[in-house]
Amino acid sequence: MESSIINSTMLIQIAILAGIFLGEQVSWQEGIGMGLAAIGVIIVQIRKRPKHHQPASTDEYP
Image (cartoon, rainbow, N blue to C red; front, side, top):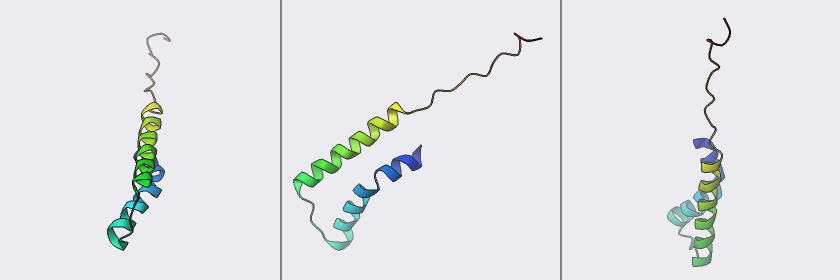
């Protein structure tokens, strides 16, 4: 699950790193867009959590 989150936010990470290392400016509209994209990724990841399947009880079948 963690690698899926990292892959989904790769473009956001690139924009942040470009600002840090290359001095590129991020406008407030781009910042809001990146924030909304990050929130969307988090919501999708929370909803996709697999439910743990309980193993079938061996007591039912002798």
